[in-house]
Amino acid sequence: MLYLWRRFRARAIRRRGGLKAGPAACAVLAVAASLSFAGVLPVVLSGCARDMAFGFAGEPSGGPQPRRLTFTIETEPACVEAARSFASQLEALGVRVKVEVLPRDLAAQRALAGESDACLLALPCSSPDPLGYLPSKLCPSGSENYSGYDNPEMGLLLAAPLSPRSVEEKEAAALAAREFLLEEAPWTPGLAQPVYDASVAELSGWHPGPAGRVSLHDAALTGGGDVITVGLGLSELPPLDPLSSDDPQAGAVIRCLFDALVAVGPAGNLVGELAESWEFSTNARRLTVRLREGVKFHNGDPLRADDVVFTYERALAGRLPQAGMVKVAVGPGETVVFDFSGPFPQFLDLFGLEPIVPARYYVRVGPEAFSRAPVGTGPFRLSPESQGRQLVLERWEDYYGGCPSLEPCGVATLREVIFVAIPDPERRRELLAEGSIHLAPALGPATAALIPATGVTVKKEPGWTILVVELNNRRPPFSDTRVRLALSLGLDPGTLASGMGPGAVVLTTGFFPGSLKDTAAGDPDRYDPAMAKELIEEAGYVVSGSG
Image (cartoon, rainbow, N blue to C red; front, top):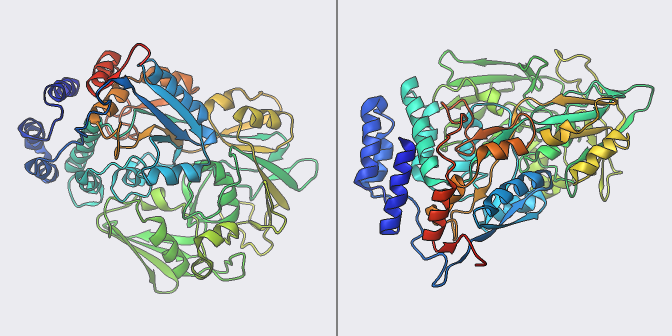
């Protein structure tokens, strides 16, 4: 039914050159609302009453003479193969796609500023709950809204999980959000793939973590030696401010420098790290965290509750559907109190791994200086020997010991960890196989599958990485929904998934995982290259010939 509605809209676009949320769209939503969605979808219907445009640009993108649709995907080194896979399929539609590799931070800055055509940056996800990452992508003020998607109704729909509404109403809101994304197509269909960390067999005691955050606290080299080299899939060494960087390729560095309120235990459960204990209220609208005593930052300052408050006020900015949904404050006896606008029992699962920074030092030096000289509570600290293309961390002798339930406790075994940037995934695999580097974190499944079975240890990280091309909705050609929908219909999800290695899963609505009712199951009708070509031509571009 959804597919028939999509085709109806496409033909309406053809007839009128654009489509608004008029009576037909309102009728579809009204029927859904009448089926028990009361209390959630009236918010959406208010958009229809305003005759809200679905985002068609209206201008003739191709000009008087049709021309070839051409654009550039800006991506990071770790995602080059994925970007090329997307580009190759789109070229079969007559679309010319260039892939440009940039440092992740630069690509993100350009996308947020609306300067790029499209971008593909890895999105690490440690939890299947979409509330942990979708608001930053879909809300107008989202910290990672690279597409410029600005549907004001979306934030209200995503806020439903933290409202006192019923389970049925919350599911209705999730499905309504999915419908918006299918019809407005701010991104291409996406992929979720597993992530792997690999080390030489001589390195033991390390533990994989979500978002590339390998724990090296217990790592040791058999046969002696206390210095290891880690190869990162980057073109240059990363900035080290955890409040401004979410690069999974830098995750191992962040994990060495910073601890969080909780850590992921061997069984996938949460265990206290900087948090000695925590307790939710009976209605799950308040969380009280008691901090561990005797913890020091690398500059000697003691850990205080206001450091946690400072960290979370910044870390949550642009990552929740609406402001004020989470309020954090210092409680009695060096506790930290989180108050939620609705029941939020999954808060620590989604946001408990935030690296804690020292508030006073961060404010005094500023984000840029902090990124160059970071201070955390982790088992390693920045060494003065760091320079050029080599980042050196040294053991923090005053480390409090880490989580008591993750033995052994105490200072790290390794004396020094050296990080080097190796942007070519094939070269990184070769260096690992020959023993020139000891650890290669955050590997894609295709690269991990080529690692030799002997002499190397491969471990799967908890969570996964989402890969999707985010289209710049602010300007042509992607301000025209016909073009965005054409790209969505013109990508064969099965071919994309098979080309990315074992374990890749199709996400038909871009970032939505399987927890949102059938969104990851695939839509066999969604792949329609003929319709895609029609829409491209109707937008003013040619799909065959020299163009």
